[in-house]
Length: 273
View 1 (spheres, one colour):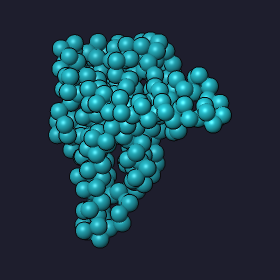
View 2 (cartoon, helix red, strand yellow):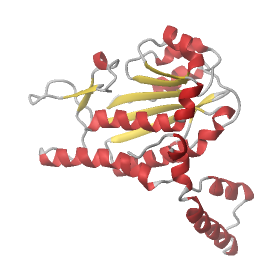
View 3 (cartoon, rainbow, N blue to C red):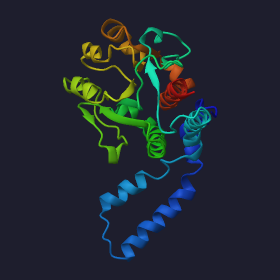
C-alpha cells in the first residue's frame, strides 16, 4: 500500500481526484435541473459533499487481497466465493495480526461462508477533519463488498447517540459529543453474523462519556483505536480487545483515518492471505 503518513495520507491522495470529479458532478446536477428533475438544494448539497469519496488506489489495495484469495481458491479447486477461515481467539494479542486459522486438509474446525467486518466509528464534531478520508474508505469497502459475496461490512456511528448506518447510506458526518450509550450493546450484538467470521474495529478520537460501556467490546475479535484519554477505561473494561492507544504526537504522524485504513488492510490480509 502507498505511504499514508502525514501530508501523503488518504486525505491528500483523494484530493488529487477532487477537481476532475467535481466538474463532472456539477455538470450532471445542472443537466438534471435542465431536465426538470427538480433536485432540492439539500440533495445538491449531499451530492457535492460526496464528491471525491471514491479513490481507485485505496480500493485496489483492498481488491488485491481478494483477488489473491480467489486465485488461490481456483488453483486449489475450491469454490471461488467461499471463505473457509475460522477464528482463533488465542492469538489475538500477537502483533502480527495472525487472528485466523484455516481448516486443515481433513476439514477439522468449523468453516464459514463469509467474513464480516463491523466498524464502530466516532462521529463527534472533533472527528470532522477525518470525515472525507473515512468516507473514502467506506466507499472502497462498499465497492469490494459488491464484487465479493464472501465479504460484508457494517457501520455504526457514535456521537451523542449511537446508531446504525443503513446499508444504502454508509457514510459518516461529524457533529456533537463523544458517548457510549446503552444502545451500543444491541448494536454490537445485532451486527455479529452467525454465518461469518466477525471482526470489529472501534475508533474514538477523544475521551468518551460512560467509559464503563467499553465492556461491550471486551472480546478477542475487537480492535480499539482510541485517543489515549480512554486508556484507563479500555484497560479496565475491555482487556480482551486489542487496544491501539494514540497520543497527540502519534496523531500528527498518522491520522485516525489512516490508522483505520491500515488496520482494515491488516485484518483482511490476515483473513484472506
